[in-house]
Image (cartoon, rainbow, N blue to C red):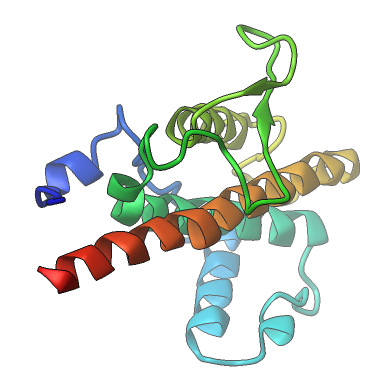
Amino acid sequence: LSNPPVSLKQVFNKDKTFRPKRKFEPGTQRFELHKRAQASLNSGVDLKAAVQLPSGEDQNDWVAVHVVDFFNRINLIYGTICEFCTERTCPVMSGGPKYEYRWQDDLKYKKPTALPAPQYMNLLMDWIEVQINNEDIFPTSVGKCKEEVLKHKLPFILVLSMFSSHIFRDIKAVEQQVGSRRDQK
């Protein structure tokens, strides 16, 4: 079994899985929060300390920055390994043998529906991107985050965690199988 090399054009094709990173405007407080989060995550410090609310910062803005960063990181990771997640290798969206995720929305899938993982992930990333770009949920101006909006961000963390469980558990297993086949040649 031979896998053709994936070109960068394929990996970063917006119509497939890649989504451009949401950027924070330089000079804004959100940009400063983003830089602080990046520095703490890249410095090798304790993760608990890295995600603690800095003194004097708004909790809603801090959570919003981390949700967007999480989305960007998961998106980039998936873009590099999406060749291993096909309808054949991942016929169902799961996070291991005990967890199967089903898609439901208000448009096409009125009831929870089992979908192949690539289709589920594309729908999920499209949905998250729409939500992140919604100024009512993720305002770009500091201090515009209303207290009740914070509760809307928690499902994003859960959904992105489900997404990452599929990436790190199921796709990693497929990738290892393909790698061992390549080594045997």
